[in-house]
Image (cartoon, rainbow, N blue to C red; front, side, top):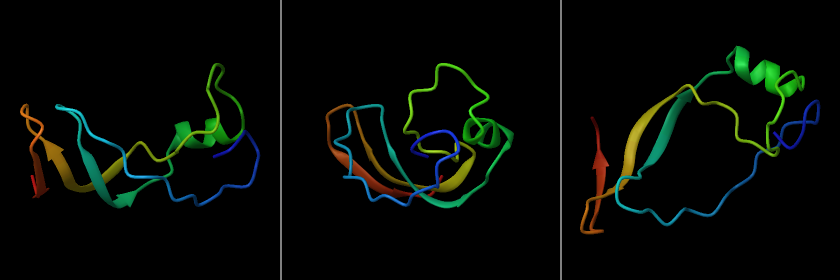
Length: 77
């Protein structure tokens, strides 16, 4: 979501470099909730646009480095 009221865009972002404690999620489902609607209409102040809507999501952990920095992938829990 580039700005309030602006057309939504599909943008491919580079894969992030993960630090211990962080993970990437391969999203299978995501919903548009009331917060997303308020964000689109500019009803929430202090939001640093552009943003990625869809914070209510379901998926599979795709990559999750352990404390040593070694990556574990394909976790289904």
